[in-house]
Length: 233
Ligand code: ADE
Image (cartoon, rainbow, N blue to C red; front, side):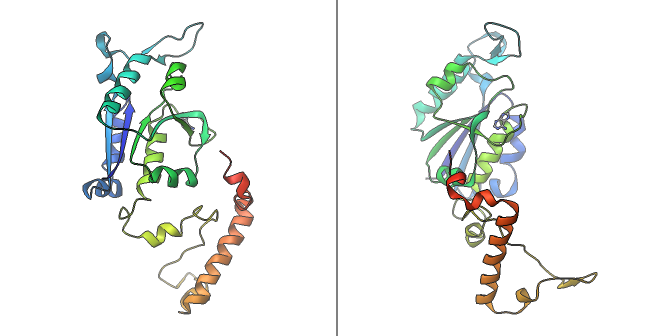
């Protein structure tokens, strides 16, 4: 059974280019993943398919009402069991590769895309199982975060990229950044590819790559070497 990701959004068009993009599209054609986009408005019981409203107790932007979100999630849950119902929000847990790996091992996921002033908090209290932020900055909505999360999951699924060994060497996969990579020509404007990579000695090349990965991680992201920090959730 392919991993299934249902994305609930008020702006389905924003996700169309993502689900039709090459690796993600091919993974769907190969039945490795099934990504389904649901328009929140289709689940509104109100006139004009209204989905948001003014917040109680003050000013501020519009907030998603409960009913359309509840209806969309209930509809999906009536079809199958879900492992996680994810909400994208800047105050969620900071996303990382460890979570991507964890999610890639699930069967059915829902991602509810947040809205710029948020959703009625009861949705978060009663329906959501996991809240994820993709970084400490604020976006206008949760569609890009949903695409980021889905993309990071899809590329981990066996057969999705056609190059599993490259995934095992990913940055972050072992809490290390990737080593530098080079391709032809071996020299350009006097800028040379490190000799070791041209030596043909695979064992030494692997050692060099690991050394580079460790050095780059120490220099650029020393916190990754402190696994207790990295794994904090
Ligand atoms: N919605 C708005 N900003 C976001 C962020 N940084 N992560 C996840 N969802 C968001």
